[in-house]
Length: 587
Image 1 (spheres, rainbow, N blue to C red):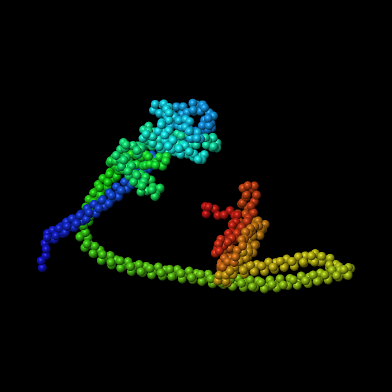
Image 2: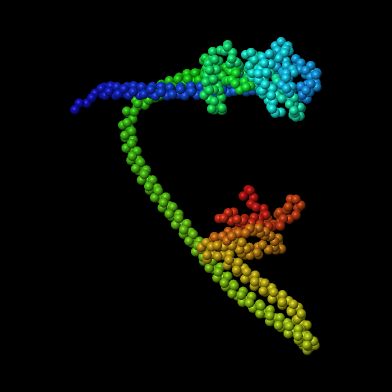
């Protein structure tokens, strides 16, 4: 049998190791390349979406700036249209209105380029244009006068609150225009005419909007023949989108287009005052997000390259050690199997021991309960026997007191008849009557009978309360009256509640709710109530004489408050509280 030399085995292992390393390296490079490609696409797509959203936001801000400019112009027009002086002027009653109120300063301060006033017949009675660069007032431009004649709806206001506002294009110059009906200052009519205010969207106004929004804004009339190439393409794209989106009025007609690697532009069509597309709004912003995405891709590629290299080295080292670990693994698996079998046996024995311990605990608990039940049953029989033995003589005493009372009343009546018919008895009888004080005995004996009857009734009530309280011979749950159990317990504790020479009487305040009968163990429940009341009495006896009201210095009477209430259809609540000092926090 031939045995391979150690060197040959080593070379074979080395070749096998290098082959495995080559295959693993190729697989790692493929996985890293695929993950990098997917990650790069996701990153680029995310940044492109973020860049488009930012551009749309800037485009909306620029559009909102134009609308705010139009709203500001509308507010100025409303001020003039609801001015009594303006109303009087268009009615022909205020000839000095123009010279006083419509000078160059008015146009300059309000940022106006056009102001026109018409009467109720839509006849132009005043019109002027202001050049904000030269500061000169001129007549209303003829294209605008022509526009007024061609578009009479601009000067037609069917209601007092009517308003026409929007854009128009005059000689390739965009103009913000607002037309407002002229009414009285209180808003009443009839409509006296129209006031028309306008502001050129020239380079100065656009530069002002650019500074205001910090966004590069450009506005181009669509009819202009000198539109930039990108604006012409965007105009055609927006026109096509408008045609395809006529069914969906909620969609916004915008186009986002990257001009180069450093700049991206957003385009939006603006309708004129008649609702026709007439202007194209363009904003240009730097492509900061795009530059960040390029930098992120570069960092991602470096990170993946480093991660792939490190991962490859780790896999190569792990592969190198794999062969050596296989034998050790087999040996450890066999040892682990033996150890697992031992642990399973140990776990089974431990589980059996726990079951035996639990069974022993349950037996001990059952034994304790059985002993306690026997004790309680014996105590219940003892209490019932004592109560029966006490109740028999008390019944004899209570029953005979009635007859003794009747006999005493008969004897008393006989003595009174004898005294009536024999007022002068014999000397020895009279002497004996004086010595025994018959009148006192007659009066006091009746009190003695009443006391004996009260005492016998008291003993009978105590025996009844004791029997009702104990119920120790009743091991089953029964439906009982909670209030009856409380009253029986209070009867048993009455001697502790009554005041004596060295302590005050304890007052019982009962706040009973209407309780249904409750299914419970009556004897055990009565014991709990007895313990709580006894503790409250002890607390009050320890604190009597030590409680003083902080308000007026008067002594506080010892009080126990017993409250009952229904919590829900399955629970009732018994609360017992006293006004004792309580347990100190130190204990």
